[in-house]
Length: 367
Image 1 (spheres, rainbow, N blue to C red):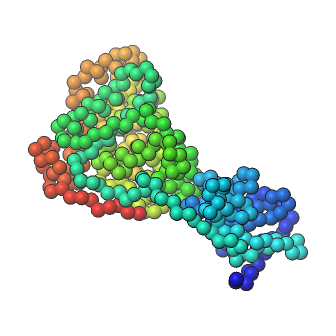
Image 2 (tube, helix red, strand yellow; image 1 turned 180 degrees about the vertical axis):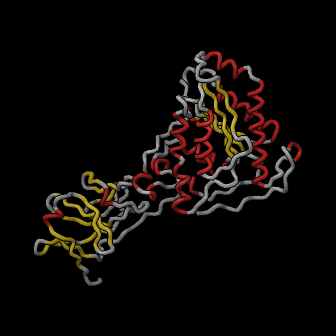
Image 3 (cartoon, rainbow, N blue to C red; image 1 turned 180 degrees about the horizontal axis):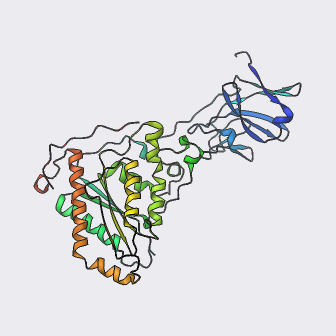
């Protein structure tokens, strides 16, 4: 057993003032607690992704990590009941002359149980096959009483055209049908607290944002996003989705890991009032930030203007507009053409949009 290495943490009276604190003992981060009149010290680094345990809270006898809520006993460092073997180091303390000392030789070692990686965490590899087009509907309507949606109508026209005329595989995701939590601001705690996959997705197996991540990161080559205009902005569901996409962009900023490569985005924007260009500008800005590229003329849109309050006429104008539906088809064609060029793939030669070279498989994108 190595000799003890005692480190002076400071005045006992001062340290008693808080039940839990993060404290550095030289270069060793500790979570120091004061419970029932006694001091205890465990490692200040969480087993999960290194969250600062001492900045968390005490919940009963357990220190809860402020990043992702993992728990460790304040004295022994053991995980919460059921995962005791997943533990952090604990340290011996003593009091001398009104000062608290900690032995920097751990009393018990850290032990990380192996946890299988989340299925989304696999390497991003484009499997062979035709161009794959994901349609994302962000309209919000009462699912029990469905009604016509202009943005949905044009989106489905675009998907049908991609499949029928350009041999694409298609998938439609209606955000209104998915149960997923809003972004809970892990990035605001620390850049490293915002993980890939999303921290919420890792902790909540019922969170259906996983379907969006799977489609956009692993499956699709093209994403067509459709949104109504709501008070001059995209729909609330659109923003709920893109806030959860921060974990994709964050991989680039903190790990230099590109999750979106050679993928195309285009947009369908429909509303009963103006502000089309502002909505399109936000969409273009955000999707460029996470790695998507755009075809020439990357969105189609429709609005009858600020003063057109007769919404039933707005609906009819979209339903009956040959020009808008042809525009949706042309948008899909432009997006598929660009995806083919990016992939250098002649994936459906008899119905290729415009030429192309031999198909190849992308190298894996690894972190």
